[in-house]
Amino acid sequence: MKIRILNLIAILSMHAFAAEPMAPIKPAAYKAPVRVACIGDSITQGAGAGKGKSYPSQLQALLGDSWKVDNFGVSGRTLLKKGDHPYWIEKAYQEALKAEPDVVIIMLGTNDTKAQNWKFESEFVADYTELVKSFQALASHPQVYVCRPCPVPEPGNYGINETNVKEEIKRVDQLAADMKLGGIDMHAALVERPQLLPDRVHPNTEGAGEMAKAAFKVLTGSPAPEPAVK
Image 1: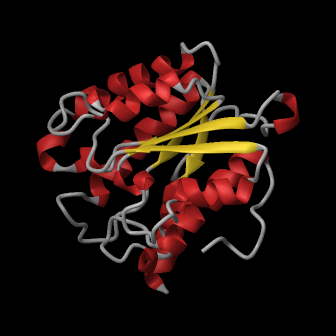
Image 2: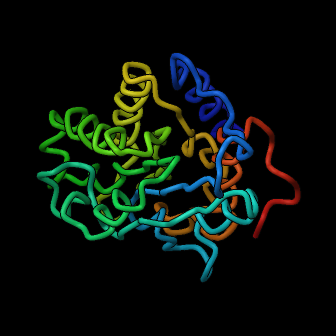
């Protein structure tokens, strides 16, 4: 009970995610299915979840045929250009740009918390800003959403840690406000349910389902249908 209360206090202490949250997306306004590009690392790719049950896959199931959700996640990748495995040099990044999506969901930063990457933390905001702008410059003029990273239950794993995740959240929140981006709080979706992150980093199938529900609510303005996709 004490841990749950402390987590709730931590959530309430965080300021609002975006200065002006984006209006819900209306698929009827598009000539074809709304194209969603999910950018991220192994959590987006689906590590930890069952086959075909990554959060983008479950989001697709929730949204239905009026949407087309593509998964451009690559395991182990960093937001930081100077990180040990930067997302910037991946084929998936180029494919995401070429797809000219209508919506972009970015969830990077988890691997940046590792000591060898965090030494470049002063460049986190600048690199994140550049990544967002690379999508905003597309002819499709996508709506861009940035995610608070998933929580990392103590003591963390693989060098990934909650201390630096919380520092990233402050910066992602400010970026969202400054650039008028949408925000999806993947941290809040799981912070009170550490059992859904069995290796203390990667959400399992149910955890990925909670992430999908969080994204669904922000994109559509409506709660995800129950029961959760599993």
